Image (cartoon, rainbow over all chains, first blue to last red):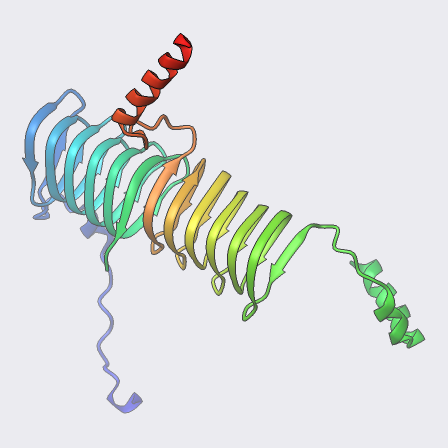
Length: 126
Length: 157
């Protein structure tokens, strides 16, 4: 085993990369005073603080404190700090202490913080 | 702890094993401990702490409940402080806080006041927050109307 050990060093993780402003990630931010009736779709990263009635879809969604969504949310990763009334479908769901959720949650991995108010049906899928 | 150890030493030097066995050990702590590999079927009430590493089927009422990673519970459980690391199939009713660890596998209805779930835990079922005003009522509106009319008839009589 050791004979064939690679002499190459493991690539060092560049911490600066995470804060690279020239990265190709598209980040959208929707402020508190925004109200949407209908559908909102984004491909990458969405910070949402507004009110939405309808459907919300993105790769990564952060529902900030004070945000409100009534309808369907689809994401790879979602962090909920606001209020949701409807269906959430995501691979990874992080529910923070300020969250209030009513409806259905479909997930693969879930993390719930103490203090959140959830009245929902949970569906686990691998 | 030190005192206990010295007591133990004294007993062992006296070498009267039979007398030690004959003194009954009271479990005043209201503690329930089901070891791994042990299967229990029935109803447990009035317990202070319950540590389940085996299999328990039935009803469990205890202030503190720990379903350990090897533990399996099916039935109804209610308590104040509940920690789940194993598998649960049934109803969980927690008055104070409920901690679900990443090794947990839960199927059923969970009623809670404070809930913490670690990433990796599997929960399949319904979450209900205690104290929340439920907007959906289990009784259909038609039945409510019938009840109201019945009441009014009774009032007439």
